[in-house]
Length: 344
Image (cartoon, rainbow, N blue to C red; front, top):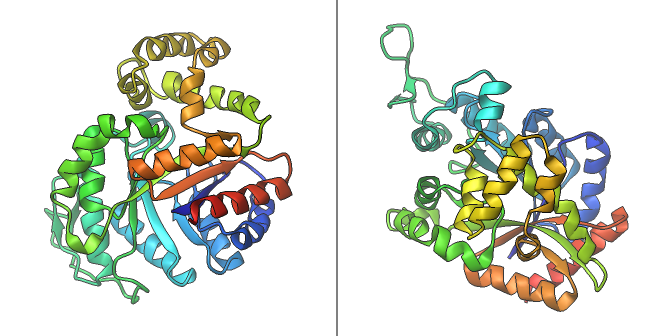
């Protein structure tokens, strides 16, 4: 199993990157850089490439709506070049609040757009003359006589840069299993993964090209090891409530749907009602402790080992952790420990 870590996108970036060298030495395999309505992730990933040597670097994620497909391909090729082949293109649809609210772009057809973007990116990386006439994207632009099919000027380090798709909906998960090198769900519960996503993964893998290899399944989890760390789970309540209750409108919240599919229908409904009414603390208090605990790697060493095995048994190949230590040294030690625990 690979060990990954998400880099914070809010402030203190240079200081955070300066510490990455320690995580790299501790055995961290890959770092994921988010892009919400923050600093752009691309400039930060270029900075990371210059400050690290072996660490894999992934966007986690670049929204499919905020750049043209060819710019996504060019950006990925450029980052792969400056990192000497260490880049992974993480793609995702984000949500209507960010895409329509911050970018001013209509949130339409995420599934169809993702499929076309993957096809276009791989054409660009193979340095083919770009000709694509799809439902959502047209290169050269249809209806004019000015555009000409062009191919990327530079020679990419790799003609197939790994693509990871962040997805939790049935159709999007199926697409990831069919077309991408990796799949990254959020709020991953190993015991429920087969029930919730098994049919979608099976349908996608049935159409998967052999050259893509096995699907890299990337699960996220808070990490803390000890007999007295259980209280750290409480810090996950506000984030879980934000997603389950506040990321979208009533009837249009993918994370709320996921909580329902996990079996928490009543809790998900109540959390959303409270959150949308502005009662965020009350909503957070209703996030089930069982859900927080079983999505985490927080607890005594034996518990953490059991959760790692549960993830492994469910198909997880990369654990993207958030080390919850009081100091930088504590967090580095956690990376060393989980690296040792997953190496057997």
